[in-house]
Amino acid sequence: MQTYSLTRQELGSLLQALDRQNDLKPSDILRRAWFGKSPPPSPEFLPQSILPPIVEKLMRSGERKGFSLHEISDLGQLLDFSTLSVTSMQNWVKRDFKPYFQCPGAGKKYSLNQTAMLLMIDDLKANLDFESIRGLFAILFPLPDEPKKCDEYANGITPLNLFAFYSGLYEDLNLLNAWDSLNGELLEQKVRERAARTASAMPALPERQRKAVRNILFVAVVSVQAAKLQSMARRYCQATLYMNKP
Image (cartoon, one colour):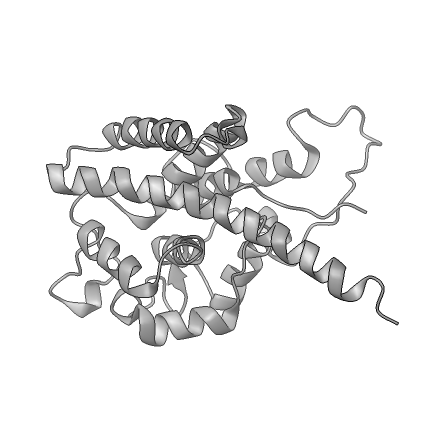
């Protein structure tokens, strides 16, 4: 039986739909991922995967202002080559990225922006250390003077929108078969051009932040691809170690 999964672009659209940033219904996004792009051929048609509990919850309610760490981990498990875990996120919110999570942004749960930030950290750590990620966040998401307003973003960029932007950019590059090129310079140029074009579509920003957005889009999509390659390497390693083990 197939496993239910989401692309990062679908998850980004889902979070934006929950935040009412687009005209899509969360249930429609989840249903499309379940059945595929085409509608079911007949009422008797059954999908080849069972809905995970977190997806079933969202299909039923259609509204959500935030998620617990366990729920965010469940969302991460829907993505290819994601290594998101509750234990890792507990370390991030309590220590490594504490200023951004001092107050849950949705009651006792983490807001949609905080959810997106945790998903971003998981992607970026494939290529960057935490100090570098904190440096990028400091430019893109300056911390407010009042700790109680930790989920407010004054410069027009939010973690949710940034996650959606680079997730869409990654899928676009997949459609263009950009990753098939073994020419490093050509690949860099192609990804850089697409990242710059995406950054230009964002709200008016100071030049320093616009360059930072362009660069983090570049880093993010390359990090997702790096995570894919790391996942492939682990699969071959596990096959070597355990397939013929007595």
